[in-house]
Image (cartoon, rainbow over all chains, first blue to last red):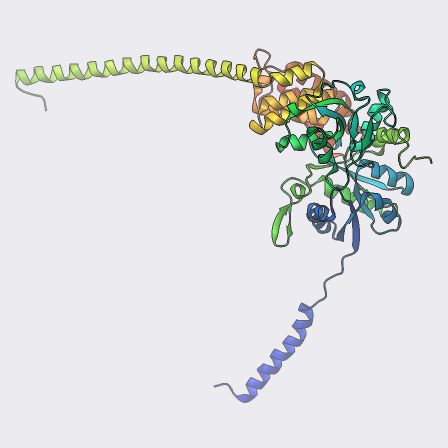
Length: 305
Length: 179
């Protein structure tokens, strides 16, 4: 049987050991730098977060930075970016040009989605039984466009009409832009159900809706389609360290369909959640066609009042 | 044990003769059976190839007529619709490659052609009714001239590197390289 003296010595030794080990175990975690990424809302803030939280988590893990995803309405994007609310951006290619021209945004990488990869196009469409065969047939018709800042929902089609010698402001019966979310789908359904005669539809949305069986290829006639232009784009503020920009780019381009992150206890495929096929590194000159369209259509960043 | 009795010896000889004859009969039947199987297999293969060709000609006829009329985006939409029923079908991919090429999406066109050729080598076979050599040759020519230069100017660009690898793959298949 242990003597009381020995027992006391053991207890003291244990307490001393505890005093040494516990502080070592409770070493405070190193604080990671925090940064924000502004994601342009396609349809709604909840949808944006659902799509891009896994990607944001992936970037945090790869770059050892605590990134926060901030959903931002397209109309507010430039103002909030200029105010310094976020250092990284994700938006459409026209938004990239606006931020590049006005705020010297650095180009990181372009998103790949659909048959054209990192590029996409805008089409002018009608129902296949409308009798219309070419752009000249849309004169005097009712047209519906997508969001005004959408390069393949408005700008591409506006320019297609100008190229065909048509004035969108004079040669149509009238044109409208639907309210609310899901504008790209709404414009396609608008001609499908006869509410309008002609629609400005992104080629990507046509592809997605046909793949999902929402419409058939034979339901639609394409009266004209623009050349392909870059799709949605990641950028970084001018003040962001170019080395960090390069690491960010590398992290994006190295994403594969099998890359997963843990979100709320679930292993989520990063690209699948974001509706993306991958990322590609383009150059700023790849966006020049959109610049020429924006100038011609008197659109931002070149608008003159 | 050698049978001593003459009658037994005769019986053994007759038994051996019957056994040998049976063996010979079986061998002959097997040979002629194998020949019949070979003929049947050739017939089945030829029938399957012709049926496949006729099926593709009928199924993808709308795509071909849209492409001939220059409506490549419409052709791509039709391929998307056919892809719902026949996902991953090589013939859809090879036709898609042709339209993507004309619409200026060269890396995607090359990737589609690679998917098609990996699944069906007939597309590079000059003598096959499925041959699509002209399209594939055009993809290789344009790939080598434009993608190679872009890749040279941007050596770290992984997408261009991948696209160029695809071009080289098609080039080697055209030259008769094996998978």
